[in-house]
Length: 267
Picture 1 (cartoon, rainbow, N blue to C red):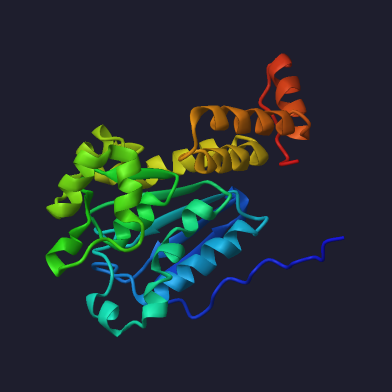
Picture 2 (cartoon, rainbow, N blue to C red; picture 1 turned 120 degrees about the horizontal axis):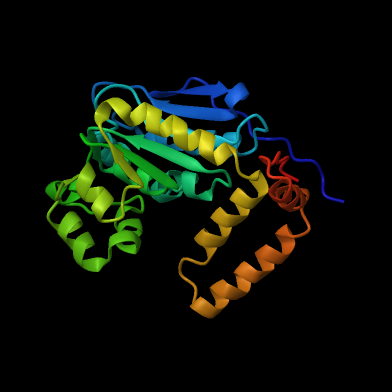
C-alpha cells in the first residue's frame, strides 16, 4: 500500500508575485507583482515552481492562470542575478520554468506589453497563451552574449520551426501579438482592454470539461510531442480505453442523450 503523501505547501514570503485562489470559480491566479517591468528573480523562479506544484495538488483549483500587474507581463530576469548565481542554481533554471508544462491542470497565461526572456519562456511552458495586441514576445539574450537558458529556444522551435526560431533567437527579434497569433505561438489575440475578459471566458470554458479528460489530454499531448506517429496513436488508444471506464465518460454520454449539460466530478 502506498503511503499518503500530503500536498506540498504553498511557499510563503513570496518574491515579486502573489497567489489569488477563488475556490468558487475553481481558479488560482499567479500574479507577477513587481511593476513596472515585473522582472523575475532567481529566488522567484524557484518559488514559482513550488507554487505550481502546490496548486496542482489543491482540490479547490481546476484551472491556473499566470498573469501580471501593470502594462508589461515581464521584461525578463534580473541580469545581475545570472552573474551572482551558483552553477548549481543556474542548472535548475529550465526545470523551474517548465513547471506549468509539468502541472497536470490546464494553465493559461495572459500576456500584455513586454514579455521578454524568462517571461516569454515561462509563457511558452503554459498550455494557452492569451495575448493583448500590445504584447511583444522576445528572447533578447544575444544582446547579452548569451542564449535562452530556460527552454525558450527549444519550445519555440517546436511551435514555429527552425527558420523562424533562428530569426527570433539569433536576431533578438520582437514578435508582436498579432504576429504571434499568425505564427501559432498565441492561442488568441485580443484588444488590450479585453485581455482579462478573454482569460475569464477560457477559464470558464475549461471548467466545463471533465477534469480527468483534461489531465489525460494534456499528459498525452506532452508525452507524444517527440514520439513517432505510430507510438502516439498507440498511447492515445490506451488513454481512450482508460477513460471509457470513468464516471465522467458515463455522465458525458448520459448527458448527451438527455440533451443537458454534463455534471463532471473528476472520477
